[in-house]
Amino acid sequence: MSETPLKTSPFPTRLDHRIGNFVLGILLRVLFRLYGRMRVIGLENVPKTGKILFAANHASYLDPLVGWSAIWGHRVMIGVARHELWKHPLAAYVLTCMGSIPVRRHKADMAMLRQCFEVLNREETVGIFPEGTRTYDGLLNPAEPGIGLLYHKSQAPIIPIAIIGTYKMLPRGAKKLKRSRLTVVMGTPLTFSKDTSREEIGTVVMREIARLMTENGSPTAPPSPERTALLPKGD
Image 1 (tube, helix red, strand yellow):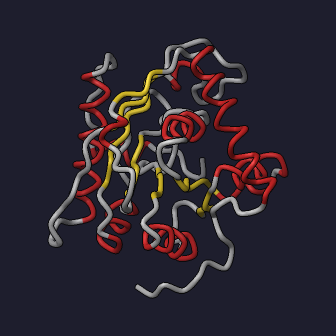
Image 2 (cartoon, helix red, strand yellow):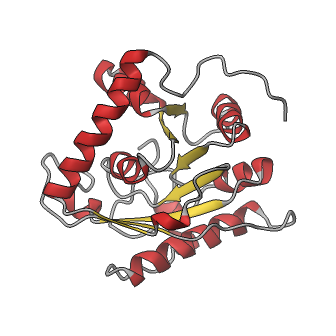
C-alpha cells in the first residue's frame, strides 16, 4: 500500500486541537473516575509502539469517550466515528481534538479505509466498533466485515476491548446519565493467518470481547448470527 499523505489528517495538528486533546484527556479521566469509578484493566497488553487495531463492543454513545480516555496517555488512538457527527460544530471540534476518522456506515467507505491504512502505516493505532452500531438490548451484535478487511490489508494485531457499564449509564433512548460503575478491559493482541476469512476474524474478536466481559463481572454470551437480521438500520 502506498504511503501517500492524508488529504485531511485525522491527527490533531493545530495548536488549539493539541491543547484540546490534553484538556479532554484530563477532563474525561476525572469525569469517568468520579462519576463511574472507572477501572482500566489490561493496559499492559497494549504495546507502546507499532500499529494496532482496537476493537470494542458498542453499547452507548459514551463508548468512544470512555474507550479513548482509557487509552489516552499510553498510546495515540485515532477513532472511527459516523460521519453525521461532523454536522454538529461542537461534536466536530471535539472529534478533531481527539483524533477521528468519519465513516459512512452500512456501505463500503473507501475514503475511511484509506485513512485507516495511512494511520496504521505510520505505526499508530485505530479504534473501531466491529458491530457497527450500538446494541439495543445490552447483548453483543455480530461483527460487520470491516474488522476483517482492515486486518487483512494492514496485518495490524487486533486488541479486543470490553467496555462494561456504559449500557447502564446511557443506553439507547436515554436522555440523562445514570450512575454506573465503568470498566474497560483490554485483551491480548490477536493475529490470524492469511487464509482466515473476514467473517471468522469478526467472530473470534466478538467471542474474545464476550469472554473479557464475562471474566470481569458482566456475564455475556458471544453474539448469535441471527441477531444480524434484528439490527435497526441507519442508527
